[in-house]
Length: 116
Image (cartoon, rainbow, N blue to C red):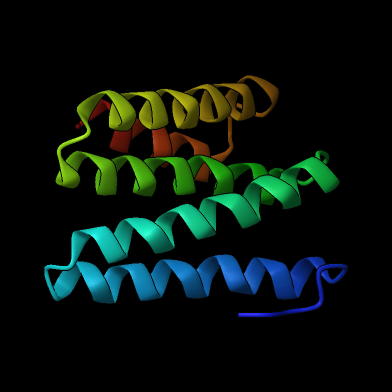
């Protein structure tokens, strides 16, 4: 997929689309393909966060992308990789909560990670 790399909202849409494609592959039981799209999603949101570090929404989406990539890695049997991704998402959620204790998405992210 190609989108204007200078348009942050189109790039953000690509993150969501890659996630939906990954979900479809997961439902079909094609975990390697799902992991490929989770990684693409993660790469795009990492660039967005690097370019827009002041956007909490992008930070929260990065935490979610790490979590979903961790799930895909876990399903593929890469438990060390999964744990690493879960921890990276946790660090971001903790940072967001420290900055704003009422950050609902970060709170939900922490609950999800603690339930794994």
